[in-house]
Amino acid sequence: MHHQQPGIDLCDPDRPTSAERAAERRDMVAKYAATLEAADWIVVRKTASTGPILLATPAAPAAPLTAHVRHASKPRQGDVFSGGYHLVLNQPVTVDRFRRDTGEALCKPRDRFSDLALTPDAAVTCRVCRDRAARYGITISGAPEPGQ
Image (tube, rainbow, N blue to C red; front, side, top):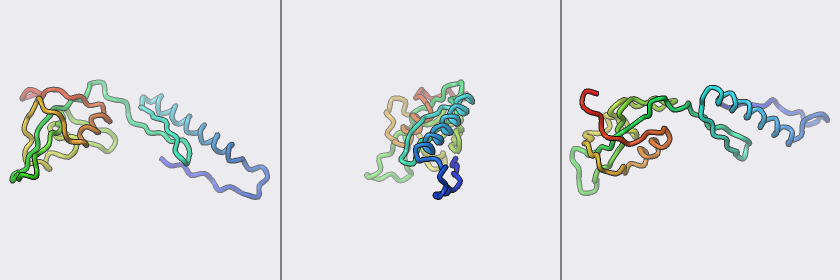
């Protein structure tokens, strides 16, 4: 969300100083952060060259999100492509604009893979899967039993 300040009259002797305007912006951001935290959002406060900013995400759901490891392969795999180990979700995830269904990898939708073979003891090699798991608090577990 971006808020725009009204124009400043440079000839006005009563205009606020830069320090006063910066303090006003910090107060505004602090009040907004308090509102988000009261609504159970996770708020990270940062300072950029333009002033204070907030990074906010909804609180994690009550049930922990889990995923399991699967190996991706391509139909005509050559010597160059050795596949990769991805995290596949055990339940659907929707956070802001990010959405994946059960059985989809964190990095891309199911239709982008020709095969995702179950490999329970492998380490995740996909950087995007690792980053998204850390961002959304997804833990690695075994694959769910068929029918669950």
